[in-house]
Image (cartoon, rainbow, N blue to C red; front, side, top):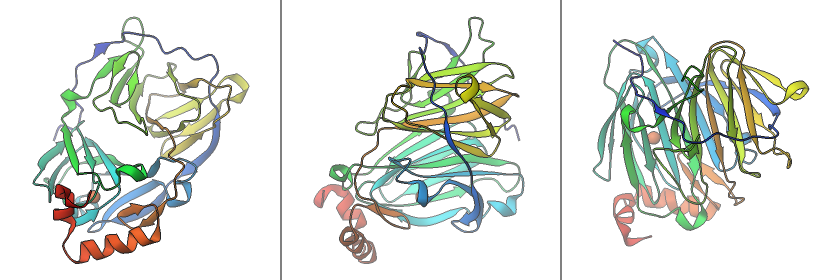
Length: 312
Ligand code: FE2
């Protein structure tokens, strides 16, 4: 199976100007766990970081050549109150949900789902051997939008803008899943939390610059190679399979990431909601009372009707 991501690049239409880079506040090693029907994964952004990295609730990384690690997939399960963004580097996964959506997620493609008032879905592998690699990010919804109607979009690899960096295109590439980079708008723009979701591929020795709004929480997850983040003496090394949480110092206007070796990393940022977080497994609301209501709604089979608009 060909596991290379297929994409064509577009030129940058603007430079990212950064006077002072954020530095690395802390380096986080993920926790090995499993979810769904025994899918092995690394939980990079864990529950204890939800406040620090508000509006992001979770980041899982999965990457394996062994079918036993993924073949069980994620059978029917519910979500309410947030958004899930699944980005596949390699492999094929079939999505089906209670809103009637179905899609095939594969090499280099992504899926953006707003669970809103309630979705029951399955995410099942469509392969029985070969590599499965990718990420799932959970993005919180503002209190006012938690009971919004579900929304879903498949983004095949060709629909994710990919920007060639450097004057002659030799400076690497940035795939813009959400937000904007180097003058190029991403595949998705979301209000309120204004998420930035970039997948950056940098040859050794190259640097990547990205402006970031002050106050937005941001992190870098390195999935291949090694990078240094920050200015000069303040720079810190982040190795593969590590997340660097970026500081929120008021004087920084972005981030500079240098590839110490050929590197691939996610750069994710968003505007914090600063609202209470009440999570019970796949449900993320603001209060315990809302969680109890959610459990009752799910138990009594009310997700589909509420999601259709009667309870929003
Ligand atoms: Fe799910």
